[in-house]
Length: 508
Image 1 (cartoon, helix red, strand yellow):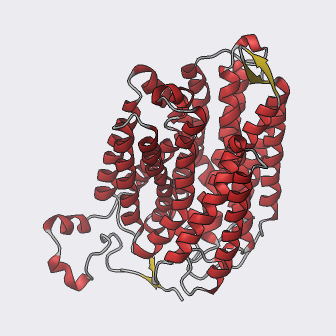
Image 2 (cartoon, helix red, strand yellow):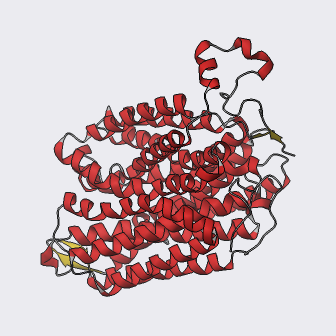
Image 3 (cartoon, one colour):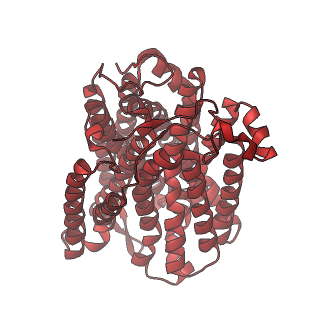
């Protein structure tokens, strides 16, 4: 049984401070901090920047992935663990960090994740060996858990008139960070030694830590209970098995013993974990809440939208960078290709206030439907027109519009349908669903393009048919997200403490 705890007299009290009666134990700096109300614009800007840096960690090394075998003197198959470790760490840590935030304080866990990210960045920056680099990238990947925690902090601390736009902005950083991170990472890796990428990440982490510690108030809305350590271990093992099978299936072979053993073991552990979660008094994930129609359908739509977004992130850069002599590629450099895709991220950020107003006017459910529909149209355009650079830019920008609307709607739908004391865990689970979609997209798109390839310059490159199939699949998955969004209940009873301070629930 979980209960809500408040510190009503001090809504911006640092986590762990004594009750109001013990104010004499506070330092002068803490007293000064408590006497001023947090500026919503400052809090939003800091949390959006934190989310941007967290999202950047996911895409940090993408421009230099093909160079890692030479840079590290390692086998190409082994260097793929640099990406796999990041995805696994982010997926596993995010729901666990959400639950810890609900129990121990969201800002405290954000700061802890930032410290882990800084340590990982320093480890990666200090080595030219494969194994330490994989460890560093795994530690960096844990930063993904910052985004759902930041959204939950906004819900706890911001006034009604600021909340919608702030949630939309922070939610959009998941896409914006990837789009803007590509040209930034490409420029750094081309201009400087590749280690500078990680020193830059460490510096950004230090800035984030300082800003969050000083400018973001502690959310005093928490739940009472204990942390479900067996549940966390079970979730970590199950997710790792499934995600390893999905992400490494192309390398290991989809019917190989390693892939089947990993995937089936992971699924079996997750089934047992689910039964355990239904019986424990303070579960890591409240599955009874997670299977409510509004929550379940939103999370399933998140998987589809994550797939649709990352499908474009995998296919469009390849299309831009392949040599024109192949008859398919557009012959652009890594830097130019990254700049071509950057406007998509800018659009996602610019859509935040638009998405907030649209959500308030029409409801989050309608925004999710419209956002998914725009992505369907984007892939339909790509399937018939991808032989000019401007066409790729157009498709990328349209996807940015759709993702900006859809990603803004999902946290609102989730937070309206769960107890206020479980918003961090629920948003963490929703972010995990997006990660499952992105990981699946990487594997499936890679399989499609590999299966539809042709010989070129001693190797092989994807064919026109391969790209067309990829775009058709992306559109089909985006259409699935629209159908799932349509099925979300228009009006669903909510918990007494779940309604956001933006007024009555509007899911229509």
